[in-house]
Amino acid sequence: MRRWEYDEQKQLPDLTQLKHFARFVPVVVIIVIVLITVFTSYYTVKQDELGVVTRFGKFNRVTEPGLHLKFPFGIEQVQKPRVRHIFKEEFGFRTVKPGVRSVYEEREFFDESLMLCGDLNCALVEWVVQYKIKDPKDYLFNVRDPKKTIRDVSEAALRNIAGDSSVDEILTIRRIEINKEAQEMMQKMLDSYGLGVQIVTVKLQDVNPPEEVKPAFNEVNEAKQDRERFINEAWQEYNRVVPRAKGEAKKMIQMAKAYAIERVNMAKGEAKRFLSVWEEYNKAKDVTRRRIYLETMNEILPRIGRTIIIDETQTGVLPLLPLEKLSAPGGKK
Image (cartoon, rainbow, N blue to C red; front, side, top):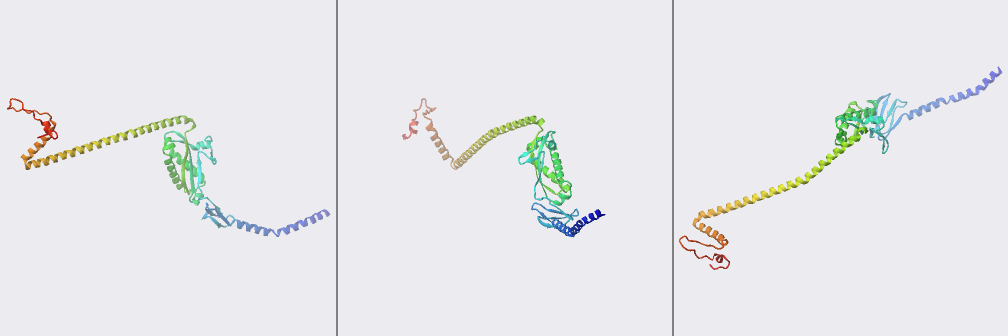
């Protein structure tokens, strides 16, 4: 009995302390509640974000950057998507760190980049998709996993376009068109899902044949390059010879036209001169005939030289006329 009484007396100070501490429990609870209320009643939205507020899990409103109030204790919760940030998804490779990329040997990336082209050739295609959030409500609530949806849609679009294109078009001549077609196709598909994102750009990176066929592919490319070189050399020779020949042909044509104009003008001049002479001849035929005769003889006789005139009625030869002396300058008439 004495031992029990001793234990009971020993426990009395502890109960007193508990009663003393219990007086502060409500105060502590109130302080904790107030702190939780204060710290859960406001939130801050950064400059590149928008605040999407849900009340009891249901969408309520969208808030702009800055400090805002909300109902505490989880009644209202806030998600802050970065609507002004450009997100990037890489396909066929991953950027390990700036300037360093993954390699094809990783099976996940190999399966992701391997595509069958429209000409039944295979190609390893690397590309990048950049996008931004244009409607945070749709982005958060319409699709369960927006990132995976964007990746799946991008692969579907690129494989669809690659199936309609040859490997040469993907490698060289249609890269820009393929980028644009893929962007438009992705945007159309994502809009139909109501994802609330905008595709900023789709850009093909490296496009290579698989390692098994790379030597044959390189030989084909070398042959095509040789063909292009021969074609360019032929065009160079064509551009050198043909313009010169065309220039010479134009020169000859211009000369012929000039000669034709000259001959026509001379003919017209002679015709006009003849007509003018004919008109004068009609006015005084005898005088004009004598004048023409004398002018003609004046032009001809100086070029004759020695002249012998024979008269049928004479039996001998007439004396030679000194026509050279008469026609010579200073000669006596």
